[in-house]
Image (cartoon, rainbow, N blue to C red; front, side):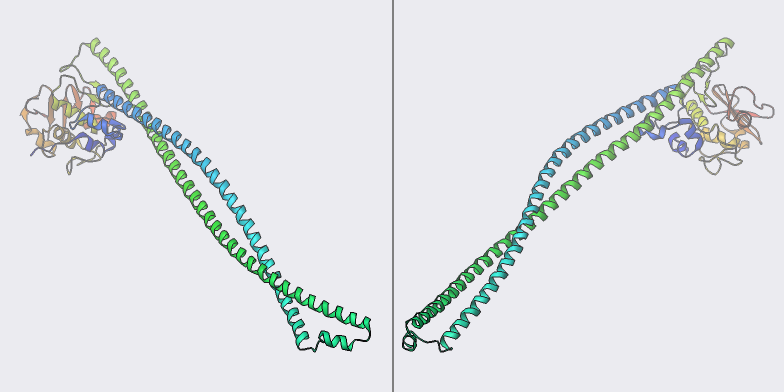
Length: 407
């Protein structure tokens, strides 16, 4: 079974892939546009990425505008709620003032009650003393006073004294009745004030709870909206930075393409279907190249600058570095032309004999390299220039030429 390699799964697991595609993995929409096949980091790809990134930036700007509008709406709601809170606070202050007044009245009523109870106690004692003095103290009656009086003046004095005693008793009885009535009224008023005090306290507590709950809810909503907008601003900054990076890369590619095109026109060397363009260690596939060639070039771009590691790419196609046969195995497998890694000697019998139109493999027992669309793909070039792609050079003596069928 042929083992296919998708570019995104490999590019996200290697440093070279991150250098080739930059921040492409940041946007899922860009990954979808790149498709599931290996494609080169061409100007067309970058233009698609720039378009997708601009769309993402536009969407984020719209989200920020929507969040700002919602924050403005919430701010107006907060202002209205604050006005209501101020009204509730004023009511609450009034309730507190009333509660203080009632508490003061309650204390005054209790003081009056104590004073009346003292008056009642004194009046009761005075009345009891008079009654005892009258009925048990052998006070004279009117007949006795007249018979025992020593003259008319003495009689008048005795009668006046008896009248004063009777008046005093009547006064004491009246004061006692009045005090009892006042004590009863004060007790009733005290009960009313206590009930009113309790009701006002409950109202104050309910008002405070309502104010606290409303205030907390508004603050939570405001913090959530501010956090959402801050997150969108942060994402917009990242997308804007990515857009600038992609635009700079596109500008560099277009400038390099212009220079290469001018050089090719001056030398008259157009290569196979138009020579591929060198873009800083990477290669752009010719527009008329077969799909398999484009996939080989894209895979070569993915590992072009990864280090040489002896045995790299043999235990698994996904590695941190590749040797010569591991590199060739990787790009052929990416195009569906190889099912498992091979060593250099195995490529001496790979595919069809002789050079190919698009791809030629040069194999020996000790080394293997390729030519793809006029470009040399070789780990020897990596040691010389820091990338496996190069133009010209390569070893030919002692190498067997092979090529994938049809290429």
